[in-house]
Length: 378
Image (cartoon, rainbow, N blue to C red; front, side):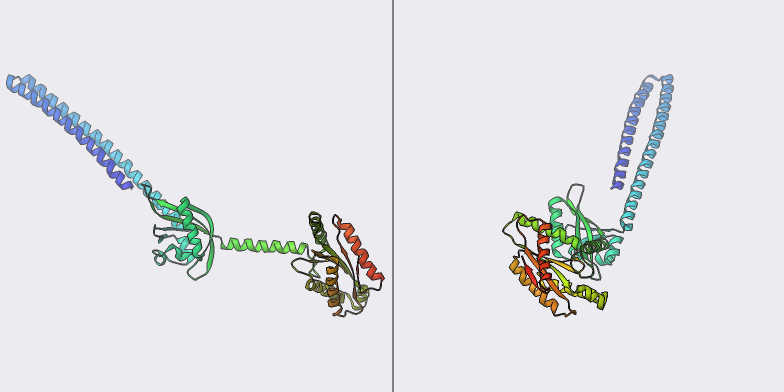
């Protein structure tokens, strides 16, 4: 484009110079012809001498004028040459940026076929320029629906920005990229293709997912008893408050609590050792998990050898069935003289945590006082 500009400007300067030169020469010729006619008619040699002087002056002026215009023209040519070189250098600079970029940059025509594939794209996809140019853009997509989403967005808005799209490389592996697509238009505003820029975010997303998993693990560890795998007492207090709050909003709901203690646990610890005691606690934790509804109920190590179970949407009779199942499953292990003393209470609408826990604790101690290895409901 800048070369045609150079030619147009040059032609303009040339046409203006020759027009003026022809005009001056024509006027000079007419003046001289008129004066020579007078000399021929009147034979006046002084007039002839004057004509010669005028001729010399005119030709000196013409030479001077031509030299001046020639210098101006050379300056214009030099300036246009400098501008042309500058445009060439800028073009080379941007081409260098395009090729040296580690990001994915490619262009496609109006039919959806790849025209340009920079080095960054070659690096990420594993294709050479010769292998990929001329192939359909959809060839790179892992999912056909993603290509349709991108193209429709460009057709509607003229561009599509920051779409996370999975693409397929030459070896069949999948990379996740953050993609932007925009229209390429000609000078007369006609769409001649699209430019695609993308950044590989596969590793970034992988690190983000690992971080999310680690945060989830830390959050879980913060509310979990490491020995039994049940929730800890801190999480119990949070959960029972939430369940009682739900009960206040909907008094027709049911909520029951089971509190249990391992009978003769201290004796077993003293005679069999702490390792055996830990095994008893772990086994009871497994029994509780198996015997309650995993998606609704929740079990907690309340402290030492005491455990508590929260049973939403459960009345005290249904809670007794769950407690009896836990009792029988635990007795099957036959850990010495150990057994379970259990207390059950059903929450009353408007009841506070302290009151509910205290009632359930009283039920459990009634089981202890009545001979252990039993379930008391109040």
